[in-house]
Length: 194
Image 1: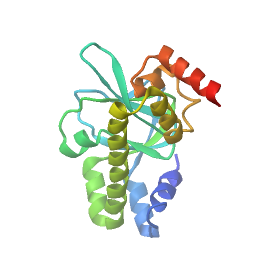
Image 2: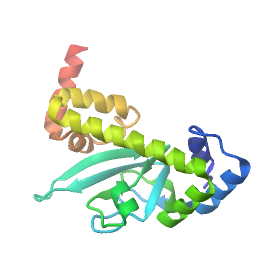
Image 3: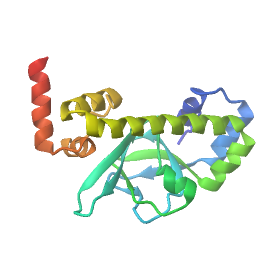
């Protein structure tokens, strides 16, 4: 699998020199992931930072009653990892599962830290990416207690426009904190208004 997509993604932040690109390509490994395959299971350490070349993933937690709650989706040209577990090397409380057959590039913590030293630009790129993910999470927490289900759904469509037709209603509803039946009502209300 080509790492061209990864290099293009990184260069959307800061241009890299040829030697830096080659070094990045040397340290990321290719992986094919089957649909419904977990790349992280709660209780494990998040050992890999994952860049998605093709496919779609969800990160989710499971509550005491066994209900799954989607926290994040990621598809092409995006990253997924339990950042807390990855950086602290403490066991994760989250799962990361492929929703489609996927192709990814992964890097373990020690290799990523080595690249941060060798390519300081890469450290800056990851800092900006993590800040963006933090802002997303912060906005999501605010929405959960200050927005209606309809507002949360409209924000989902704005944030994940390329996923709304790829994900089953059950996954979207879990992300929004509502039932699939209520999601259907929300969608009908939106259609009536437009």
